[in-house]
Every structure is written in structure tokens, then in C-alpha cells.
Image 1 (cartoon, rainbow, N blue to C red):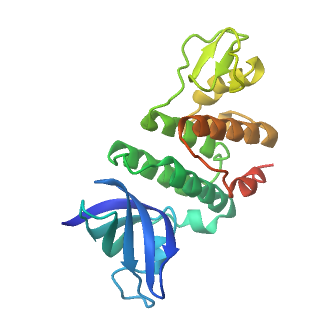
Image 2 (cartoon, rainbow, N blue to C red):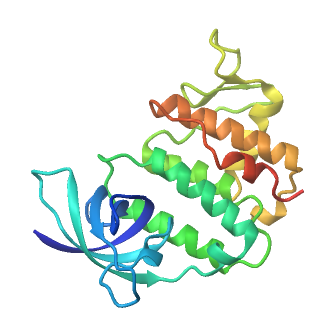
Amino acid sequence: MLTKTEALVLRHVKYGDNRMIVDLFTRECGRMSFTATVSRGGRGSVRRQMLCPLSLIEAECDISKRTRLQKLRAVRLSTPLPALSTDPRKLSIGMFVAEFLCHALRDEQQGGRLFDYISDCLQWLDSREEGFANFHLVFLMRLSRFLGFFPNLDGYVRGCCFDLRSGCFCTTAPLHRDVLLPQEAALIGLMMRMNFSTMHLFRMSRTERNRMVEVIIQYYRIHIPEFPELRSLDVLRELFR
């Protein structure tokens, strides 16, 4: 069935001389994999430069329930995000976000509100000149709401621990190791109060910010099976001294 849909490029892999396998997160059908014949010139219906990770595109494709690899027929850039490929800080954040989404978004998830959330966040980051050092913290924690394991922030009192498995605060530490002790548990509540409008008001050192990234990844790894190590994390750790 011929389908037109908005889509986010997650990644692509070369497949022969002029073909690619492209993973897209689409508004209409969620995450899907496509084969595409890529033009070497500037006039083809699918051009390589439009398939960079985190590109927001309009895709024309053949979709069949009988096959796992769909066919991508034509691509048009829908929302340019120039700063994500030219600003070194945003480029590093974008690399991390793209790799993270590749593992966090699964085939069974649908687009709709989740697609809108990701698209709106990327456009915000692209347009912002300063004050985006905490972007990835806000983005990842709020993403968990769409994936079904948003932390329960009720019941916090000073001295609580935070159980990463159950996603809630507790007055006594559980027996397993996946727990934040009171000092770091307090940072969870702080972090969840941040949004894109206010996050520049929350001052964090690079050490604190990197620790929070590690905690978030640990949290996702508990709730998403086989969530791997992220290669882009080392680059992200060096940002915003």
C-alpha cells in the first residue's frame, strides 16, 4: 500500500553500491525499516543527505504487512534543522539522542503523540542559541512517560531512597542494587521539575550532569531489555564544562 507519512530518520546502513537500509520512526506506523535506492546526484527521489540521523522528512513508501523491510520510494525534507549539523555542541547532543532513540524506540510503539514530542523537542534544540546544557536530561526523562515507565514522584520526603526498578521513592532501601541513596534520590525530584523553559535556571556541574545521564541510562536499561552501551556517551560527557 502506498503511504505518505512524516518520519524521523534514526539510522541508515549501506546495502550495496547505491542502496541503504533505513530505520525510520513514522507518525503513521511507528518504527519501521526500509530499503531505499539512493541517488548519487541531486535530482533523485531519495538523496543521501536527507537520510542523516534525526532528519525530519516526509516519506513516500510502500508498506506491506507481509514483509519486514518496506520500500522507501521518495523523501522530502519537511523541517530543516540546520544547527544540529553545524553547531558542535548540538551535533554532539544530536548524536547521543539519535543513538539513544535507536535503542529506546521499538517496533511495537506507534507514532502520533510520541512523534510530535520528539519532533517538537528537536526543533526547540535547533532554534535555541544558549541555555540548552540540560536538554538531554529533560528530553530523556520526559520521553519515559510515552514509553510507559515515567517515575512516580509521589511520596517523597527528605531522606528517601529511589527504587529504579519500581520507579518510585521508598523510605527504606530495597534489597537489590538498583537504588539511589538519599542524596541522589533528591536530584530525581529536582530533575523532573525541569522543563525546556526553566532548565537554564538549574545550575549543574559537568560532574553532576554526567552522573544524572548515567542514572537515566541505568533506569532505561532496567526497563528496556538488552539496552546496550552507548558509543556517543563519551563525547557527550565532555560538553559544557
